[in-house]
Length: 140
Length: 207
Image (tube, rainbow over all chains, first blue to last red; front, side, top):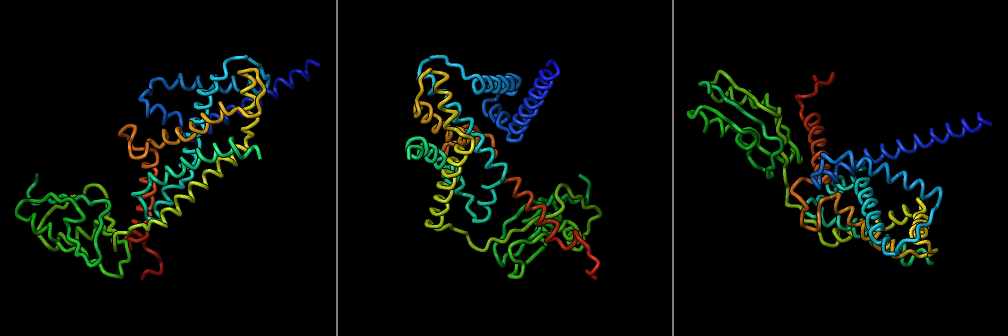
């Protein structure tokens, strides 16, 4: 019995370790945190941001595995949704960049001057797609 | 500065019109003794022709050869890049509006569809409902109060990352996109420098 428990604990720890390090590795490749510190000029606070990510991930784990209920105000969801959206948005922007879509597109069709409009097309498209999905699409 | 020393620094990238005559001062920065400076500046380097297509690479060795045949100097010092890329601009490429709109809507609907697929892929709806229940204790299949700010935030996050609010910049640092475009151009230049420059490669069948 003890051996079985120990084995389960070990496997749980091992899978958590690999998922956690995978998450952090992915986050580092996309360079979202350096980008945020660069924008806000808070390079010295980068350790706090690391802990923010780690604590956020652990809270997410607790929330998704144990499903507690807190009975707080509905309006708390507005900042939460906004924050979540910004994070996913930065994720998507970074991914677009990592795979180098825009520079190549701009080069191919020779529209360097209109690159801001093209980025805005992607941004507005994301907002539109997301709103469309939640307000209309999922009810069909 | 030593008497009779010429310092040249090749420019990275130079634009030229078709049929343009390219002089040394167009493709390099020059420091030379006052007496010979005008001559050196006006050394003929290249005549752009139809056969050149749109890229010509001028190697610094060619420039040194030209200088030493034009003026009597004992010393030519080169600084920085070893070649200049002359980019021949045939005509100012204006993008037609319908074409631009087509690309714009391609990107717009493409990214709209991508984000919907992504949400479905990661079961975003279930997660949002769960989150709603965790925080409020109410079971609501349509947590719009979460979803609408989320959607707006999605766009905000991308703008934040690219550092552009339409034409306004959030701060004066280059955005990752601009750095990426620069890097891509740099890679292309490196390729061109090696492959379009006959002097930088010697093959067996060249003679």
